[in-house]
View 1 (spheres, one colour):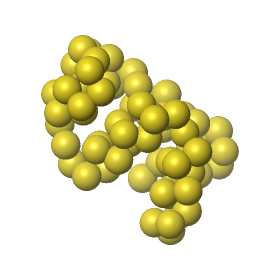
View 2 (cartoon, one colour):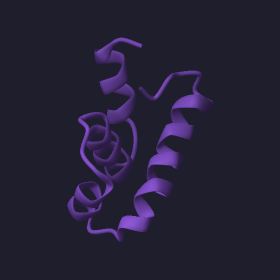
View 3 (cartoon, helix red, strand yellow):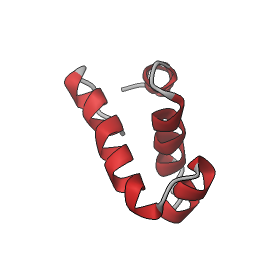
View 4 (cartoon, helix red, strand yellow):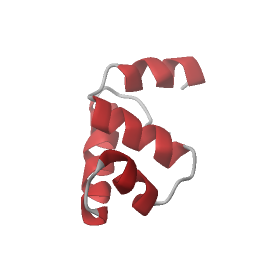
Amino acid sequence: MTSSRWEQRVDAMSPAHAVALRLHRAGYEDVVIATALGLPVEAVSVLLQVAQEKFRAAGDDPG
């Protein structure tokens, strides 16, 4: 998937999913993602899993 296609797909997601995916893709640790979103660290893996599943359901690779 091209970077611009990835960005378009992320832009269509909820803000929390979009932020989580962007930070994860940039290499940030779960604790940073959790802090940015005001979530417990334990919630980040679930949030990322849901966001990545949305990509797969659309036939895309979450990257």
